[in-house]
Length: 395
Image (cartoon, rainbow, N blue to C red):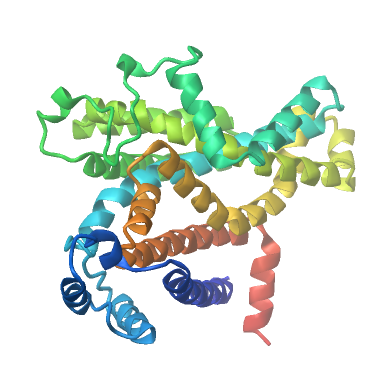
């Protein structure tokens, strides 16, 4: 499995390098003008030329590319055109994106698995058809339109009510937070989000270990819904221990709009693939043997059919990760959620190329890291990957 993961990591790095190289030249060639044309419209020609020299925009394109590439190799993000360190920008915008992306992807994946499993196992009725149609419509929706629809239902339609009547996610910052609450603390919303995510990850890992030990000792399964509920309960307890529970809940009162939008956009693909995979294994021999043993239908579905149908869904998740991150970026820019998406569109508007390229680099790194995690899970669940790696090491 080690060689398999190294090979996947190397291939991903090559793809990331090719993508960034293409995007660097494509953006520079396609977009008219430069940062000086956008920002110094009131200056004369001599002043503009002096600014170009100071910012390095007078250098040939290939020279700027290798200069940027050298900074990447040295892990030096440099400064934006406005003089702000890019690392400080990322410390502010990456945590909001991870909050929506990580929690949203996990929930969308689990919802898609459950709906796909249930609707494909039952006879095709009106309920299953409607759920399938709904998932297909949401999956193929235009992200800005879906974002507008969710925001309308939350803020104006009366279906849901924003806590305290606060909406206003159109600003570049965390608009909608309780100012009186945040004036009492020195932490920024991004720092609070980092602590929130740490609590969630620690809770998930610890409970997964307990779940593994419990199932090995008792030979019984912990219901998935209960497991997710316990993770959420432990995470909230962690927020209380850190003393950030009020701040965390205040952030969630505005974060759930982009999160719900992302879940609605993403779960349909997993549901459709799970349906197709379940239909392939539904009449398999091992499923029929499990039924012949007199096992309950839910046990046959969950522990025999669904476990074998899970691998194609995981494989699709690996392929879809870059597109899912792109969906998060578009949703963020649509609602003004202050993450990588909003930061990227603002940088594109001002032609702030150091921020644009380094943001694309971070998006690629997030996608690369997520894919490696999924590859580890797939290798753990699929013995064929470990067997192929064993054969490779002994030939």
